Length: 407
View (cartoon, rainbow, N blue to C red):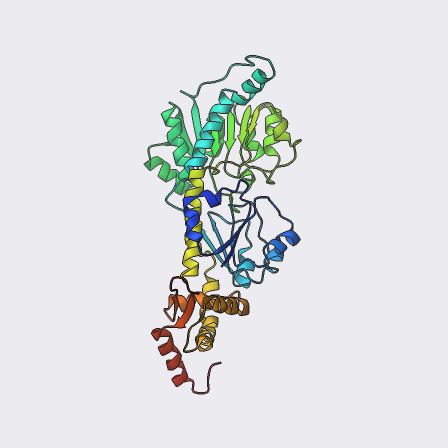
């Protein structure tokens, strides 16, 4: 299959051990970032499988409508950047493993690195040293202070453990089901949201961005924080009311912020307010960007492609596509078996013919999964495809039931 990978900025994926899972496929990797629909439509015109790196590129209806060969989008985690309805309308499967049982240790570690960097003013102290200066102020230790975890999921739970290891008092605020899990894990929970914001020395956000959490942190919430407090956001910018953090920092509550995520990414505006504030540490959305995390994520993503090629899509978030395809591919499978005939055909000829004639339907994959066709490949010879005994029997059975021929 023709596979395209977008936004692999440092050409990292081909160096991963899991990349070998794509052996035998044609893989194109783009290292820059493009969002223009015309440019993307040109790049992806022959793409059958599209691999996305998180939410770096928006895949919306105007682009989807211009990709007639696209049959699978494979990625990991949430998918607010993909128009799922448009994918379903065009019979494009979206596979995205939600990895419910595994936290992103990379994101948790970055969160803690930012906490220490801010509390000890590490970037600012380094700049002073580079500019010929010496110490610029007095930092704060973490032991004995209060760490607030807003949103008790996989990453939030991990950060809570880091805080406890540093001698901090951990307190959690979240929806009721998450609060109950936090209590079961032995953490104190806040009596209400207002008290939570008022008592934290360090407050770290750990929620997914969905309709109910967008703007869940308001300017009023931030204004209740201590003037010495630190707010950390390595989750999603949209969790905070747009513009509220900048205004709150200018007003002095909270006193510091550490940010890894932004409303518009990549952030290219050097005049962005957060980049101009001396009490803010910013990083370019690198929470999950480690070789180890990439291997974990893309092993899943490539497994989704392998499963799709074998006729068994996994982690499908729009199953209506499968239901639609099941009835529509049956007559095409019969056509495929009839076309191959009693003798072997070159593998390349079969693939080209059937993926060109019905690019959005998994005819080849379904016939292969049901054991109706077999691939023959002797050393030094061109691979060929034959109809298996099961395929011949299926075709013959249909002929008996429909003597007038195929429809």
